Amino acid sequence: SRILTVAAAQLGPIQRVDGRPAVIKRMCALLTQAGEQGCDLVVFPELALTTFFPRWYMEDQAQVDAFFEAQMPSADTQPLFDLARALKIGFCFGYAELVEEDGRLRRFNTSILVDKDGKIVLKYRKIHLPGHAEDEPWRAFQHLEKRYFEIGNLNWPVVRTMGGVMGMAICNDRRWPETYRVMGLQGVEMVLLGYNTPRHNPPAPEHDRLSEFHNQLSMQAGAYQNGTWVIGTAKCGVEEGCEMIGASSIVAPSGQIVAQAITQDDELVVARCDLDMGRAYKDGIFNFAKHRQPDQYRLIVER
Ligand code: CDT
Image (cartoon, rainbow, N blue to C red; front, top):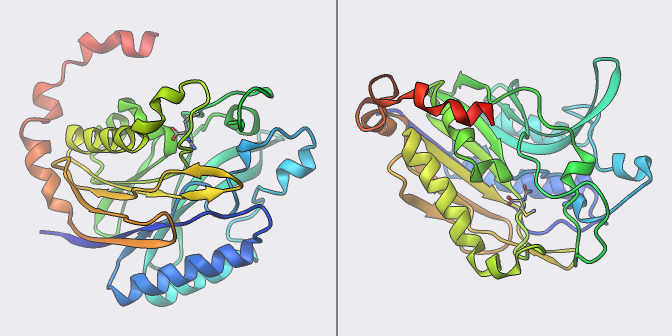
């Protein structure tokens, strides 16, 4: 067996006035706890450094860009990198990325994986951007990811690090089977995933009571169908008057949840994960080479 002790480092709410240094302090406190519990890897949420700003319609680009990071690590985030390296812990977190690429400024909803030596070894840019691009004043709050971010342009890369094959996904990605399958086809053994999920979905309020169920359903199915661990980490609680679900979960390749958060606040959820546990699924019922029928799936990429 190849054991990796992993933590989903759930974050409680981050209000708009909370500066990055205060958030980094909370993340460092969770890292320290993770060190005390012998963790190898800590997974923080999507857009971990600020409040979930797509809930607001903004026209002033400078106001929007205040939520973005133009450098990583930055002066604000360096203490997180330093502490993790001192503790010999790998970590992953999400942030809003501002980058000059192809001769223009581009904005992505990004997550990075940092190895135990403090080196960024993998970057992913969110592909399934939910919500809308224009103000919809009838909503109690907006979900303007389609306004503030471009669709990620890195596909779903995986990397061999910390003794396993690691990949990443971000929030809404977890609801789409293609997310896990593209990584599954590259032999992924652990998917690191952060989310910000408002309980209330203005276009379909009748689904609100099913929020945790759909969260679990998606991650458990993705894990089982690809023989991979899934580490789902929430930013949750009441942020700027908007409730977001918690239920951060560590899901085994069997599809079973082996550990889950019980609060809506900063909380470390830890499990000893055997990376070899996916083998029986990858070699058996989900042996892709033997049983998949890609010729029959063409419609999926044609439409
Ligand atoms: N952050 C994020 O992707 N949240 C979405 C909300 C969907 S409702 C517009 C999610 O899938 O959880």
